[in-house]
Amino acid sequence: MTSSITIDAAEQETRGSDFARLSRRIAKAGLLDRRPGYYTLRLGLAGGLFAGGWAAFLAVGDSWYQVLVAAFLALVFAQIALVAHDLAHRQVFRSRRSSEIAGWLAGNVGVGMSYGWWMDKHTRHHANPNHEDHDPDVSPGVLVWSQGQAAASRGVARFIGGRQAFLFFPLLTLEGMNLHVSSFRALGRSSLKHRWVEAMLLVAHVVAYFAVVFAVLPLGKGLVFVAVHQAIFGVYLGCTFAPNHKGMPMMTGDDRLDFLRRQVLTSRDVRGGWAVDLALGGLNYQIEHHLFPSMPTPNLRKAQPIVRAYCAELGIPYLESGLVSSYAQALRHMHAAGAPLRVRGASEGGER
Image 1 (cartoon, rainbow, N blue to C red):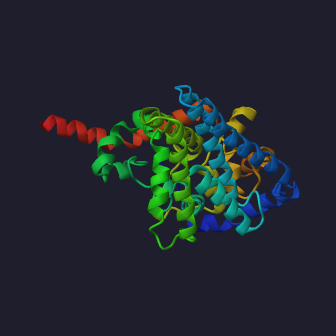
Image 2 (image 1 turned 135 degrees about the vertical axis):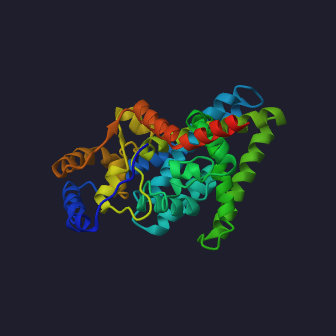
């Protein structure tokens, strides 16, 4: 089981300027500068593929070949969600308002995910990655992320937790639907800004999506199209975010680290070249992204050798893995986290 990270207050105080020195090196290299040409091309391609996918859907018509269109559109939806991620971090526009409007179009209208809800959740994750008390991405739910969470689990998590490593990828087929449901549930929170705007845009997405699907396909084929589309969308998104932190050290309670170590020690980079860069939307450079969230995606690759060398100077472990290895580490961590539930299940079975 991966242990939590601890550091005493005095040591943290002496290290407070470490990130500032790294930040100066990154700024001097010009890696925080905007990349308007890159994002013009990327947004244009994503929008073109989105329009092209739905044009293909209309052209194919009432046919089982729509399963292939559903798979294609699932990949496009995930890429648009990754664009919304970059917008939320203001990698594309300097203005918060411009980022917000573009985020509503990409998130709410494009893929049916509340931009405001997701941005709030993701901001809290960035502030305290892998902290059991503060990171919503490792809060116990259907899955548990530590043995402590497993021991305290109830309901579905108690049933699934012991087997979660084996069920992880099958469960990801539901992640797309979970994002939609969570987005609508967030509309009931008064803390969500512009919730009436978000509500109208989400409803517009749902109405348009089902109207187009069932205007072209009969009920049976339409339901298969939706199931395939949402399942692959969920698996792709889950596979994009899972390699980044799962299986890395967890923090609990009063565990504290300075910013540099908090971000580096809880993250891993994923090797794989341009194909992995494209598939994961640049999030394979997770360490660099967490250190500099507003850095444009194409600059993350250039920042990596600077960050890696700086960590070596300070003796900070910097983890890189292949894509398959990163999934294996995540699954081993999940299996270890569920151990108390397997022990509990075995003892309860013995008592019978």
